[in-house]
Length: 124
Image (cartoon, rainbow, N blue to C red; front, side, top):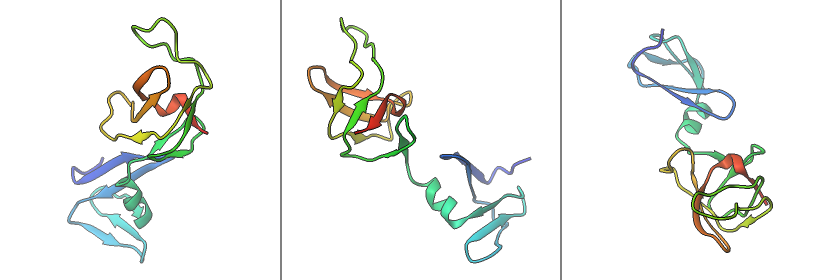
């Protein structure tokens, strides 16, 4: 169904498609097509596919330096108490190399350094 030359990257609400096939062609000034896989894609989709995006629990895009708030209690192995809902996290760093979707590196006062998922935080 799809050719081996096509790269599929799951995006915010759709599938971004970038085809490296030699049989791609221009449909208009901003859209392209592939005769091997039959997909059509725009220049914006190609540019967005190369950008690493982390979203918070409300769907807002997060960037390095943002301040966040924890939206649920987070139990942490080896700690007697969880990180409480409403805890503020300042000056985060987005890490594309994070493990298990933990792409947010941060320091929590009274706890220390921790990697967080976007699904447990919201922008402050």
